[in-house]
Length: 296
Image 1 (cartoon, rainbow, N blue to C red):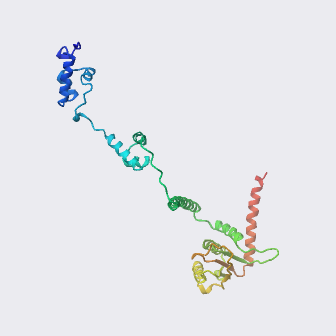
Image 2 (cartoon, one colour):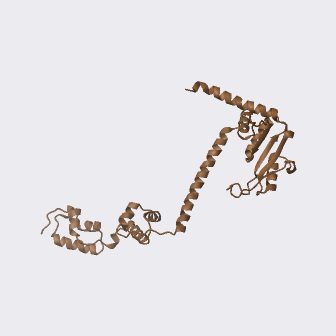
Image 3 (cartoon, helix red, strand yellow):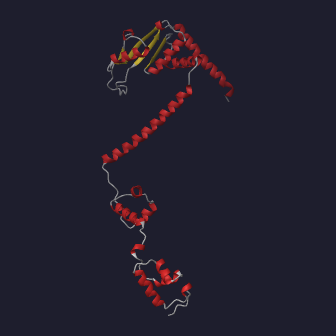
């Protein structure tokens, strides 16, 4: 068979089989395809492919494939029971590539956990969720507190009226007792109530304080706590009222932070009580009247 194709400056190609023998010999000597093409003056890649058909290229011309190493490592890890996510993090390759590389391998058995291990994992997850909820709760509280700012005297006055009418002692038609008595377990409520009395110019000397607490609590510690909170000596407290313990009652306020309730009395407070009642119903009447045009 004679080659009839031109070969540039070299003229006609010689016999194909003879040219193939020369091309194969050059490749076996270690020449690259480009070197063979230049040596034989073969400018047509199709013909060069036919000349070298079936002959492997020299080892030094083979380009290493980085993915071959990743593939082997991925298969090795998969056989060790690793998940796609774990392999992806370890090797930095895509899940789609991993799936192609290991799809012929058996799926790793799902790890079995004891009841204790499962419970511990669930507990950690729940604790993390509770922490996030608490952080969100605290952010909301801080934002709301900042919205209040510094209250005016009138705002404190109105707050105090509502506070007393919700938590303070009130006279009843069947038991008329016009006296100012406020009892609460929340130190902040006590602080606001005392600030309100100060705004009303109530004489501090008319104030009396007494502790009300369960007999099983640390009475001495509670008396000390409340005395310091309102700024008096413990000896100035009136006689503490002890509540008898009822074993059938499932009380929650039994820890070291339980200080019972503080009762605040205003001596000779009948006149003040009447004013408080009048202020309260004045608020009710104003709000009700303002709402009348909107009623259907």
